[in-house]
Image 1 (spheres, rainbow, N blue to C red):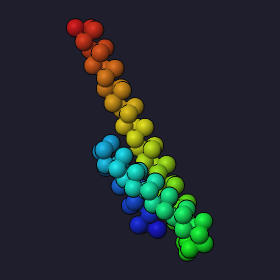
Image 2 (image 1 turned 180 degrees about the vertical axis):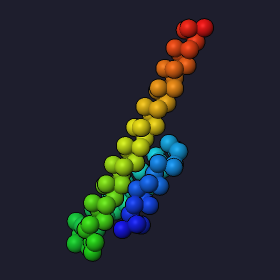
Image 3 (image 1 turned 90 degrees about the vertical axis):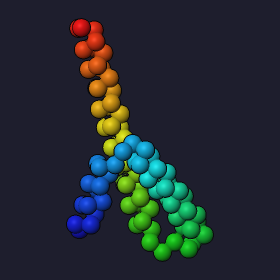
Amino acid sequence: MSKKKDDKNNFKDMTAQELAAKGRDFRHEVFNLRLQQASAQLEKSARIRDLRRDIARIETQLSALRIKGAAKESAKKTAAAKA
């Protein structure tokens, strides 16, 4: 159980570029697993669900980074306007 918890927390330490690359890799893996599923060669169907959840975690973290970046930009504009 601790391994899953470590994986979840590990996305928070990544940069936006690393998250985007990891998301691309996961999406590619989901695609390959779906091909295996369609040809009845997939042994662990739960892996698709796990990957989808990891992709959602990545997208959530990317969104949080975007919001944080937008807040910083807004603060800079406000500070510049006051000066």
